[in-house]
Image (tube, rainbow, N blue to C red):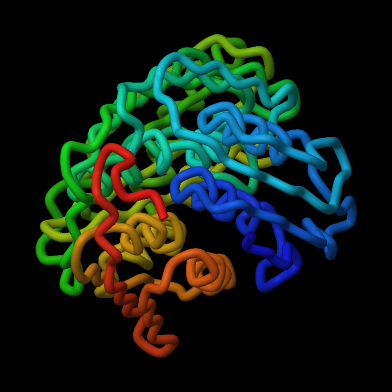
Length: 349
């Protein structure tokens, strides 16, 4: 059994989700202690509990401690299964993070998967579904993964009620490593401006105007949307694609924050990134690490910021897999010698 200190490093839901992903994928029995111990409300919240139950479902795990507020969890995985899955967060908690918890295991299932997750799709402290669709999944695609994502209904804070749907094709071979040490030329820069249908129509255009002003003369492909949702909300997301790299940036609207400020916030993040030489943004650097660890060969990329999430993820992965992960704090360079996990569950450890 692997025992994980849930208060280590970042000490939040990241430790839990990565541990669940690797336990389900590798068939390693898991115990997590002190879950989110340093938070104002420690233990499992609704979003974390949804991740536990989703991971349990896809691998037929036996679980103890899966209750709201629980700070200890025992997780004994069974065989990973594809198929049709539906998961409910029950709040505006991030549906994208629940999906990301089960994706590693489902890529190595023996059959395809169709996954629906109901909850928040554009909420604070988590990647919006636009980031997952335009940045995270294309990066995994470069490693050989085939995952299609659709947002059926957006879900804003505080009611959530959104729904994302993913179709996951099992891997035919081990994931390929990424050589993203130098990002090369910018291939595209795209913006998604969203304002819920009850809000004034001009918001979507003003958000784009704010992003354009922050970005200056950089070319921008724009997409505008005014969908129905249970809660009114606005958002602007940007995605940059390079020859050898991906990056995403986003900002959420709120009462008292102008549309131009929303667009400008995301635009300023993107402008700062484009002025540097990093090949991935700080969120993608964290999210790619698990996949780099199980890919066949050496993955390298450069992040614009070494975060505590990245350091913590590296620590958690090392508890499950004997893999060399190097993070250069000065340059942001990340190097991973992948373990080369075979496809279709043949190499569970």
